[in-house]
Length: 411
Image (cartoon, rainbow, N blue to C red; front, side):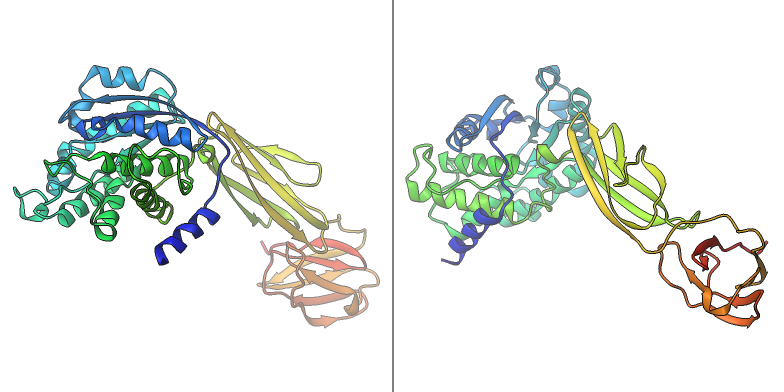
């Protein structure tokens, strides 16, 4: 009951995207070919009301290196602008010793990822995290049980994805969940390695949730011939494992590839002067709207505001879409005037100044920082025509008889 409630919470709270048509290429081996994993994925998507264009290249026993040295792999990658290219290594290779994976797997996985990016900058590489064998692999103590082998595969695929700026579909993690919570469901065929129909249905469900970024709804019409209860257990596992740890699997929805974050800082050039910096991904142009009928372009811009509140919006566009980020700027008293005739301000020593002129009175002087916040001004001496004062900072301006003056820096 606890797991059911958690699944229902995920279904209600997970981000839902509109109907999509994803283009997905599967590059794998016999784990991908068994029971037609790409076709099962397509059937699930169709039952969910989505559309997919799918192709695959599945060579039995192929490693990352073999895929990277096969011209047909690149023909498939270059065939069209894929949204995702799913890549799987040989079932054992990511579980091998750390150094071996570093030299014999990761460089070739990265080579394939670079080729995907070169063909289409908005395509994402997604690695197929496979599962440990039913009783592990006896050739090495570190992988001689399911849980040991599964853990090494998990860690290796996450490391490979991180090295390639890619994501992972955590089929192996969902496999473990089913083995621990529904042990009566047989995920393997007789060799203890390849997937049964249930195993392929679980894998395809994980790929759907991972690539579409949304949960599979209960009682899905398509069950690949499995009984409804078994199919629902597999769907629940896919929903839970993927949606509970999207960040861990480094999953980014195709609608979110173009991203931007902005930072606003007072720069001290003039009262109300701000510097805005934008950091964006998959973007070609950066445009700013300062909320006061002023605009600008570029990754770093400066703008001076007058009294008021303004929503500053940065919009970035690129081949993968558009994104915006906004920040609210609130300014108190602001503006700057030239010194009136007969009024001067001089720096005396560190943090001390004198303002001179006709009708200068102690009660008429105030100090503000560049955001309009009042500062603690200390009067040291005063008469009708001068005031000597101190402030904790020179990045300030003075208000005298309704006029604002920038505080000179002692030179």
